[in-house]
Length: 310
Image 1 (cartoon, rainbow, N blue to C red):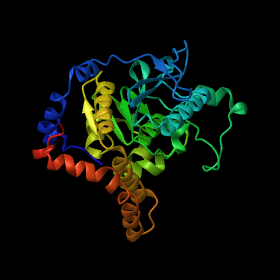
Image 2: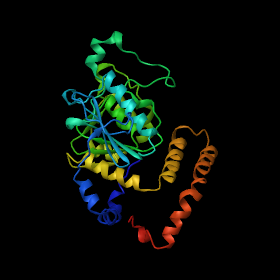
Image 3: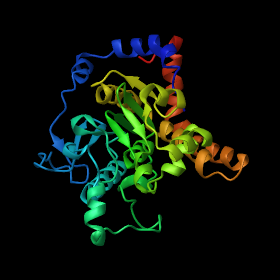
């Protein structure tokens, strides 16, 4: 899914963002609130613990989930995998959250699984082979989320880190970011969805080029492939991802999730065209009285004319 048509939407998006109040301006400055854990009860925010491998921060209906192991380029060990799974499962359950943004602290998205742990603690490494019974090695990679996830990619998103980026619906990638199947060099297989999601996303031929060679892919090539949805200047991936998340969160959510679910079903699960079409109708029709009628009334009153998002 390449979103190169973003340029054509600039006037529309400009109108949308210019219509925001001072609250939006504050958002653009990224004044995030205190860290909290999605997996904990909402009787108050929790302070980030020093050395915590995953840190979450909430802003309204948007949550950021950050891998916090910058000393190893955010490589994922067993504890980090467990925490990532907890946070994304909690996000999916929380009715007050609409969109999540996944990113890495310290300039890198994720360098994959922690190979030092794999080399030195093989006896304690427990991997569930049945994908229906347990998490993937990187934690949330076997999830099918019901709500949008955006990856804000900086630095390295390689090996298992690439697989985590593929879990997201959209990827905002910084200009200097590098993606690739770097684990090819060390005989570590893609067992967190890489061989499943990558061919669906960019096509089998391009996917095999990356999988077989393990070569690095820069941001602009990733954009041309459809692996990246936005390319932004260095240091801006999280900011742009949060802007995108807030925009997505502002839309009627039942309609958005029905369309999202239908697209995912048709790509991965539908055995026939007819069944995919039936799924679309079955998910879409119940939304009409819940959100569509009210939306049509707003349009009739003059809202959204000329394609504006205000």
